[in-house]
Image 1 (tube, rainbow, N blue to C red):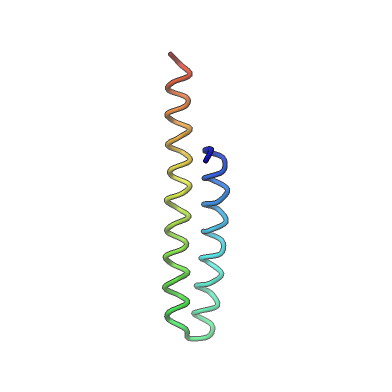
Image 2: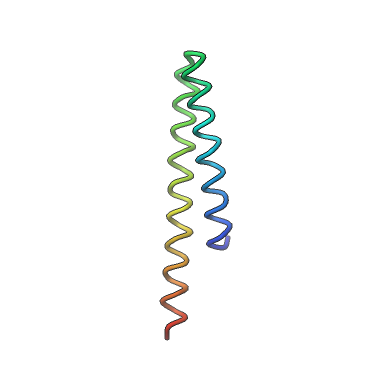
Length: 63
């Protein structure tokens, strides 16, 4: 997957995770809150992977 694709998927996962957390909190559903937090963290990691790919690509392009 490209760095842009990783970043887009990461942003989407963060957004969905935040929504799940909000719904879980509003309904008292701890399981949904936990799933949302896990998905949010997954999104953050995906975005960092995209950033790392960009950094590597920029480093390779300099040589």
